Length: 490
Image 1: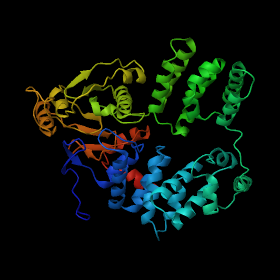
Image 2 (image 1 turned 90 degrees about the vertical axis):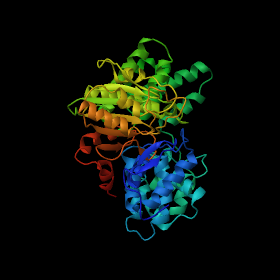
Image 3 (image 1 turned 180 degrees about the horizontal axis):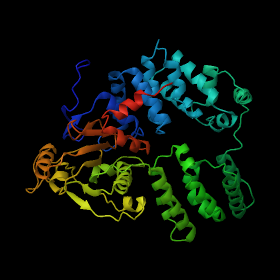
Image 4 (image 1 turned 135 degrees about the horizontal axis):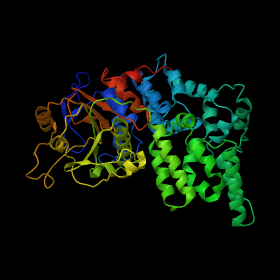
């Protein structure tokens, strides 16, 4: 591979599925990966291949940009594992750089980020460099005794005390006693929601006693506001079953906009909670929580402005969208964002796989209802069919896909154009309708390619609501995502 004479943006390439595609810049591809991957195997590449591509992109990109992207992914989008990988892999290149220590401190958001970075580094990259030691040591100063105790990592191969022994962090007023206890092996987590529920499940002479103990813990945690937002979301079913009298208070917590923003909870987590609750059947407490979840989804994704004009939201419903070996998969993310975009812009919805078709929806329905109405199937991924079926003159097209376009027999029929690229159909559509739409290309797996050349096409990635806030900026600055990352300071 040529190191210095890199292909230009818009150059034809082949995607992971073997179809014709167009390259992104290394910076945009790296940002796409960092904001989408959970370091799991996907439909067209393994976990090891994902990590290999991350390492290649780190080599190709400016190292300060890589550092900024990792901090942005961790602190703005809540992406954890991939930020740990990048922190370790970037350490190979940070010797002598004056910002390196500050980067390693900034990429830590919770104490277990320290141990995860060190565990990955020990397994893959050996000796810990001085800049990493100093930065991770400085990051201890962010945390009080409660946080250090909660994330001390007992039972894990790399514990927080191991990190402290390696780096000798300086004590601060808020953690001095906790650090002393940590080093002596005396630090215990006694006041977290996990430890309280664990103790409740162990105490009592009978199962009825344990159930009552858990009920009392839920009452305390919710009434005192000590249950973190993500923990609330994960435990809604338990609250309904074990402390039904607290459902109303839990619902009020669910729709607290400030708590939603602070939590960095990714929007698809609401759908996971929704699906879990739906298993309980139709009872009033469940319905109350489901209504609150609907409102919470709309709050978390409700800051998208109306662009004006006429928009089309297109969702890839092909087989690869459901084959990612993780929860969520691209299908869940795509369906949710499609519903949000359609409601916010009063857009038409189209789904496509082998062929494309319009999908009618009721704009008065909730985001979750619209999302759940979008069905996924199998077969090829025929991007050309979008513009063969489009009948309106659109100002904008929001395209949600893993971008793995391909079409081979038997999926190609005599009624479809036998082109592996959608560009001819796109050009025909523009000539037929007089349209010249902006295309917002959402890459749902960070695959590094797009189906269209660069003109009026904006490549977007990320599972957070924050990705939607970038959309209005793109028509003025097509590199908005990259430029937001370049503005990160540490």
